[in-house]
Image 1: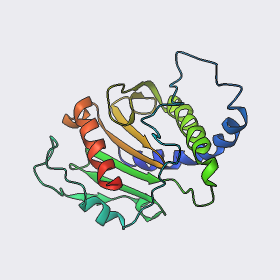
Image 2: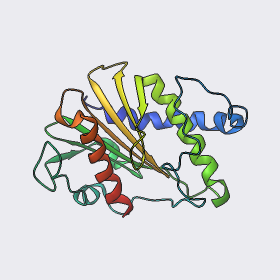
Image 3: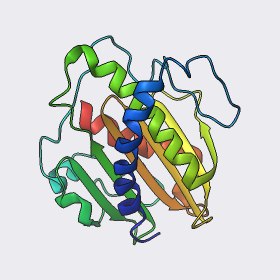
Length: 206
């Protein structure tokens, strides 16, 4: 699982490349459905307002990590457990952490919308999320939307390069939260993954 979050964050470059194509073909594909495609358009857990708030990384990555209380999770009793900062933390608007003795990888991404007009924000958010799903399908065999969760979340399993990996992605406005772990580790249970993801996201948007 080492460097897996690096690969995920770098995969965002692929998403941005696909973004333009989807944006141009968005109307064409609106009414097309495929059972293997995760549809996210008009999901009110993604953007629940006509004028979605755009977030940015206000503090450095270590300070951002310290704001998250991990003590309710299965792998630690500490508010701030031991962690390592990954290489992508030195990239603007991105943080990467390894914790639980290397068993858990956490990535936080704030997409840059500084040059996006307010009236274009929702269209861009929707197109980028569709591009994300296309990328996810290329990396994992099984992807499912969590229907009964507060935020838009996808749990992915059976990574094509490492079938032992289980991943949670939460998408909220311009924020993406990624959590990866071994499918047999305690935090790989769906409720643990979702609890951790919610803790991370809400520490950022509070």
